[in-house]
Length: 189
Image 1 (cartoon, helix red, strand yellow):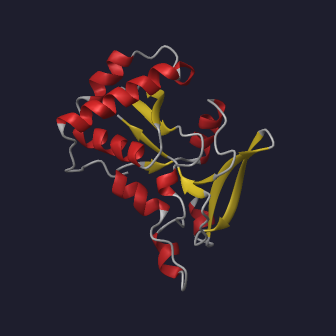
Image 2 (cartoon, one colour):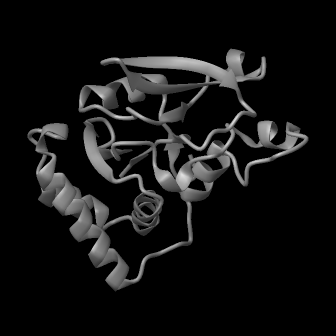
C-alpha cells in the first residue's frame, strides 16, 4: 500500500469529511464496540495523507468506517462499508497486467491501480469475511479481492459477494470486468 502522498485536504474539506465520518461512526456502533470517537479523531488529525485517502474512499462511494484496532501499531482500521461495492470503482478489471492484456473493450482502469492511486489496499478474503460479519454487503454487486499469487499467475483473480444468505468467494479471469463488480478497500490510520 502506498502511504506517502503529497495530497492534503483543505480545512473545509477536512471538516466536512470528519463530520461525515463521525456521523457514520455514531450510527454504526456495532462495527466498533468499545471504540472512542475522540481517539479516532485524534489519529485522523495527525495524518494528512491518510485523511486524503479516506476522502478518496468517500468520494468514490465507499462509505469508510472504523472496523477494528491494531493493538501492536495503535492504528484504527477502516473498511469500505457501503452496502454495495463502491459505485465509483466499478467496471474495472483486476490489475494492470490484465488491463494491458485485453485486446478490445478495455475498461478505463484496474482495481489494483485505482487502489494504489487512492493510497489504500484491496480487501483480502479474510477481511471480506470479517466485513460480512458486520452486516450484509454486496447483495447485488461483487468485489474484487486481493488474490493469491498462485491464482493470479494462472490468469485468475478472486472476488466475493453475498447471495442466498451466505458469502461466496469466486474466481474469474483477471481481465474480466462487469458493471456490478468493483472493489472494496481498507486503510490503517
